[in-house]
Length: 248
Ligand code: NAP
Image 1: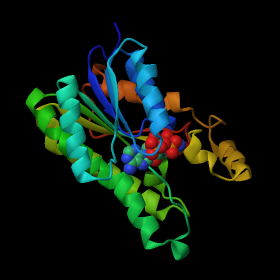
Image 2: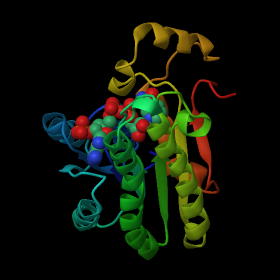
Image 3: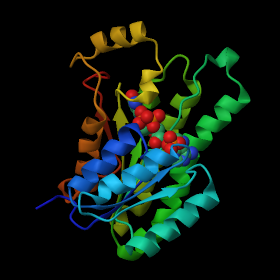
């Protein structure tokens, strides 16, 4: 029996990278998948067809996760189209790196808005249908950078550390309603986001990882399946590192 048979999962930012891998794993475990994209319209539309071919219900929505109103409208559409929501995965995220001395207000605001405010927007919108159903699992993508900090990523680190505080607070507030809230902290995962980094620096990083390699999006998605499913039904308020031992 698949782990997520007939569950309704919403993944934000699934047109590429980790979000795309999450959407596939969820579908392979029998879930019906709602997902969002923003700028990668063609990839988003193609994903809807690819997921549907797996025999589950899949709908892609073009929606900006950083926009409160759009998040509300998205949730209303998902509930109308799928009949409810069991699992919310806040994955959408961006980087706008730079040393603090050179970081602009725009770089700060946009990263906080897309990475952190989006988690508030979607979680708030999901609370009502999840409370009605007396069940839910919320999974937020943070980062090892949110735990440890990283030179050149003060905005990103702050957004990801904020997600951890938010995740734990929601676990405390909604535990009595049988709604769980956990975070996943990936380390170095090979996607377009990390593809932008300098190749020599990347090789150095890999050497410092105990498992001696970068992670794959599917390896993060496996952790999502665990936290989405009843396999983790007594786990809430946690941050699960998927980092090859990087922060050990
Ligand atoms: P990615 O390859 O750059 O993909 C980012 C995804 O987010 C895209 O699908 C993009 O959609 C979507 N997105 C961006 N802004 C959005 C918005 N305002 N509304 C809706 N969707 C939006 O990134 P990734 O590497 O897969 O990272 C996914 C998540 O994992 C992020 O939260 C990231 O911070 C976190 N993470 C990644 C790593 C890593 O090593 N890669 C490590 C730790 C944490 P469009 O292209 O359609 O705009």
